[in-house]
Length: 118
Image (cartoon, rainbow, N blue to C red; front, top):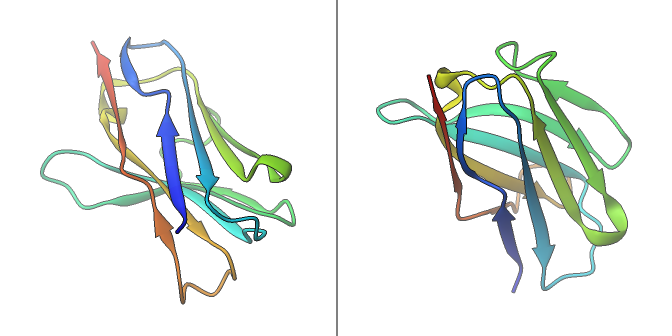
């Protein structure tokens, strides 16, 4: 049984920073693709950032230049460093893991709340 355990959310003022972590436990398999999504109240879940075990990285336009995704393959952990936070970044952030990179079998974290006050 694989679990994705997220941490690092919280309340921060606009312009501040937070770092989210997501650790995959219960499996030693190597995970191809890891992502962060977010969902604000009343909105659809959106993709924030992607990182593959080959080092390919992509960001949503709304976070480029402010957020940085990274991973520690030895620990099966992905991070999201969030700088220059804005109130519109307020959302529940979810970790996503796709071991094969095909989307056939994926795992989701439980979500962590990020609130940015103005």
